[in-house]
Length: 107
Image (cartoon, rainbow, N blue to C red):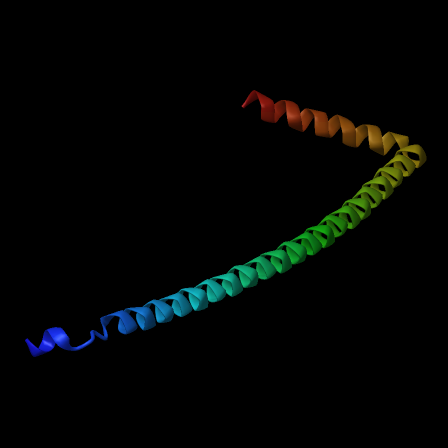
């Protein structure tokens, strides 16, 4: 019966355990917040970098298309000049090309 008369330390232990659990929960919440913020920052940086690369690619494609368009226009201009200066050979080449296409189409 001696145990019944002694005050129990269970209440003080439970209070300490609760305090430690609360501190651990707060620490875990803080860590989760830091991770979330880190992920958001990384996501924002990745989005910005991707947007920048997309803009650079768009400009590069636009520049390449402009160069290709200019090259085609130069080629067409050269062909037109050749036909104007030498119409007979141009007509002969066109006739032979037509004949070749006709032969290939029959097969």
